[in-house]
Image (cartoon, rainbow, N blue to C red; front, side, top):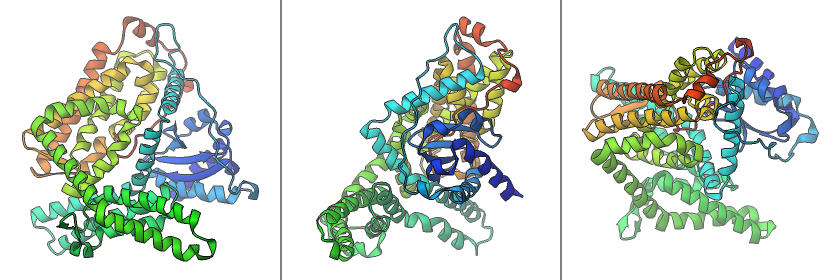
Length: 512
């Protein structure tokens, strides 16, 4: 029955994005179906947002339809099957073109439209305008780095939860015969994550994926312990995911040079050999050491920052994370999260960054309470809040707070307060983190891990969420509206039946 439901969802989406011949490529992440379109003008955004299964849409380098955790992994294969069934031969290999431009909007001010649909349009316009500003070489590079890690998130989550369960069994003494098996299952992926990173890096940057994985595999090969580099023995895994990124990126460029200069008659033999050999030697005698030093510095700095000034660090990280997401700079944190998980088993930064989502939820609740007559906007908030509690914050950002302007700032204040709370406990010795990147909000509870025990860890994280909710609510209640805004917004401009559904939605892995 669930298969029929997922296929029905895919069948409802397909004609609204222009049909099979308009699809260039299909992928999905934690919550989004990502589609490359040939012609953006064929998409019916309003009808897509109106579908019950669609939480929202996001325009980025691909057209992204937010279906939510779990649902997207089930709908995507059905969608792919429908596209293949309906595709005509003439579209094979057709180029993907950019979508139609959207005129940027501005926050609501006196005399501007106040319906939920108009706010959603403003949010979409702001998103599109920010996307245009984010199309700088550095930010595009960071986005591609993020694309390397996004496919790994499901395995990180699964192995992280298994590691947490194994820790509970180990501490309680239950099922001792099962503990070694769970430890192997949880650790196996992490022990080889460099290979997956190398494979995805080569794929993302236009090389042969298996060659990127082969070069990165050198990093985790036990035999490197017999090799001296820079006056010391190398350690298997030294450099971790950062070394794998660098090694595979180098392999892509070596492969391109070989394809350019090696005769076609011997290309199949010479190019793979030179790519693996040259990149492997540089990795062993340079990149592993350098990446290892960088990874160690990242871990030491994060530990020092939270231990010495956790409250202040948490305030800054929690308060600035939503603007970082808007600027596209949050993608630089993904390799850092993964490096910390490799080194310590968890990333202490993610629970702090998750407080930004808590501030956003608190702000949205305040908007809901302050505008009792705006049934249209309240309907949008009610539809987006469940996802917000689970850490999917952009329905509220681009559908509510950002178009309104001031509530976005007060949401950041709530995030700062929650981050300071969690950071303070890190400073006091209650250090903990997430064993995987991806979820936040309430969805992060199963992934929490700390030396003070599960009870204390969960209590501190829950306390941080509560602080984020309360401060975000209070800041928005008292400072989120001018009198004129309340006059303009606290009306019922259209019937509930006409209210627009949730606007652009979803957050990046590890993005809160």
